[in-house]
Image (cartoon, rainbow, N blue to C red):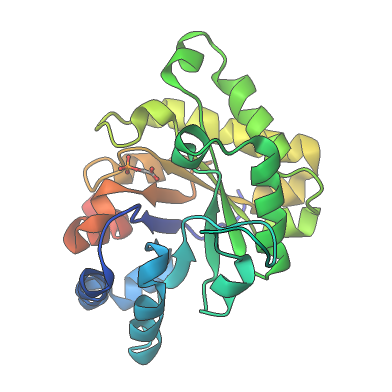
Length: 259
Ligand code: PGA
């Protein structure tokens, strides 16, 4: 099996003003050990208004956590009121951007085409996209999960080169498991993350498929992280609710210690 370092990402969603953000980052930094950092890549994705403050704390205290954003526009600049360009984020040392989160797709009407444009724009600005995909409960019950997710991966990666995909992260997040307390079983999560990897294999080649990191997301918490992370095609987690508490997020990061 390819040697992929797990990547655990905290998606803060619309939580924490900049003062609360500083506090949460400091609390997390006290908990992180050298072993954590060696074993796992960690990213946090605060709201845009927190990014400058979080960047300052991470850099001043040399905290080894990657700075991420939750979204961006695909254009470099222009008349797009309320939007944020990729270059504005990279200038603030943002290294990772979540693209195509189901809340963006469902609540803000983002299409596969927009998401593909964002993936390419994030790469162009020399950041790493975390491309999110996942099926609804209705799609799962109708046996359409595999087709839906592989379709989202194909559309999201259109026109992206193999060497770029190899360095990317793809997050499989079943919509019915997000924020609901319901988690996919480790077997189902593994099967769907394998689907994502097989889709990359079909589109590109073995080396690319074996290199891309695939996260599971959807009610990940300290109690279920070890079993999920033990699956061969799951290379980390995209964590929502549990990342808002430094202790819970750290226990997810330290999933190796649970057993
Ligand atoms: P959750 O959110 O962990 O609160 O389910 C995950 C996500 O939406 O990224």
